[in-house]
Every structure is written in C-alpha cells, then in structure tokens.
Length: 331
Image (cartoon, rainbow, N blue to C red; front, side, top):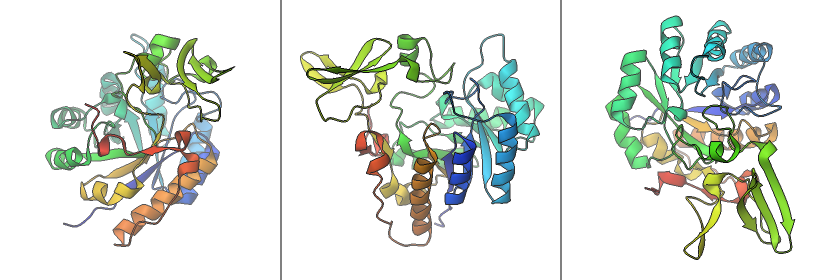
C-alpha cells in the first residue's frame, strides 16, 4: 500500500508564531481571530483582520496554507459575530475554516460554497455515521478526530468515510474530556471553551504556597496540591488530583503532554491525512521546536529512514509525556 504524506498542521497564536511555524516546515498553520469565535480566546493572542491578511500572504508566499479556527458555538439568537468571522475568512482567501457548530457550518456551506470546510474536534464526531452526515449534508472535507480513539480504531474508520480526510492531534496539551462536551470549566468559572473560547481562564488561576507545598486553585477551588520541588501543573478540573474513598489520584490523566512522535509510522499507515500540533497559546520557540521535530519525523518515515531521536521533555506539560488514548482507552 502506498503511503500518503500527511500534512503537518501547526499552531500560531500570533503573527510571529505563524512565521516561525512556516519557516520551521509547517504545511498548514491554524489561527484564530481576537475574539470569542475561537477556542483559544486569551489576552495577547490571536489575529486582527489585517494581521490575518498579512499572515495568509506570508504563508502562501512560502507554500503553506492557513486554516482559520472558528470553533466555538454562537450565542443563541446572536450569530452575527460568527457569521462575520466566516465571511472575513472567505474574503481574505483562507484555505479552510475549522467549524464546530452545525448552524454555522450550514451558513458557511450556503454562503461560501467554494470555501473549504473542516469539522473541528469540538464537534466530537468520531464514528462513520456522524462524519458522513457532515460530509453529505454540508460538504465537509476533513474531520479533526477527538482524542479518544486508538490507532486501530482510526485505521478502521478511514476506509469507511473516504474521501473525507482525517486530522489527528500528535503533540501538545491533552484534553481528556470529549471535546465540545465539557462543562467543567464553566461550572467553576462561568466560562467555557465551547462558548467563550477559554478553558480555565488565567484570571481565575491561583498558586498558593503552604507549609506542605503549593496548592493550585481555579476560582477558589483547590485542584491539586504539590510537594516542595514538585512541578506544579496548570489547574484544569479534568486534570485535578482528588481524594475519593481515602485514595488520592488523578481523575483521568496526569497533567502531561501528548507526544506521538514514536507512533508516526503507525498513524501514517492508518491513513491519517494531517497531523495537528496543539499550542496556539504557546510562544514561537515552542512552535519552532515542535514543528522542526515533527517535520523531521514525517520526512524520515516517508523516506523509509528511522525516526530521529528528539527530546521534547523541556516543552511538555510537567516535563512528562503520554500517548493518550492512541495506545490505551480511558473508557
């Protein structure tokens, strides 16, 4: 079977990060507007319309594509901000938009029939029936799969949905909930990634020094407690450490980063179209280091060479890594 070279889809939270990603070898860069239409709506991040126009021109001049993430869910009765986001992406000649809300997908398909549509991971489509629905009804050409499937499940899924493409996460912060369905951040802070574009917003985060170590808190809730000298992870509820029946443990997964570099041959054989790196909230040094590593990895696999030895511990969450559900299921 002939292997298909997957695209390397890389994050850019700023114009500087976009340039770093492209120069490091990204095939595609994904970005968001500086508002609540994207799920990384943090202060100091994202693009104005002018910056996006310039970023698209730079990427296209260097043979790369730009995907615009409009992946939050519009407020009922007030979709204008989201409609404008789609209209502007089409006007600025973005290569695709990444959408989650079915109403917004219907709007984009009807208003901009030539605009390429990608289904966001926030839509949580992980089976042939749901993916085929989006493809047949709206012309969606690629689906970003939730981070809950094994490699074997992805390999079985791909033949059933062709010609729809699949994109999977290969590195970065690991969302261990079913994307698009999480209400934990909203419970604690009143803000969620699905509606406001923020999970565990920084304004609600506190680190409190105690005699026994450091407590991480979110909106007054203690999420974790760390001993002296122990790395203190970012307090998201799904990665909290809690006491139940006298036992202290993490709910789903320790605060670690997804890293599938060693699994690239298996993911390529599974027929994945694109590899996605998470991290629009990270700086250009992170972007450059990860993109360079995965560029070298993909190129080595396609050339039949051994994978290069790449140590990415220094830029992973808590200095630890996991292969997530690709090798083990939480179900």
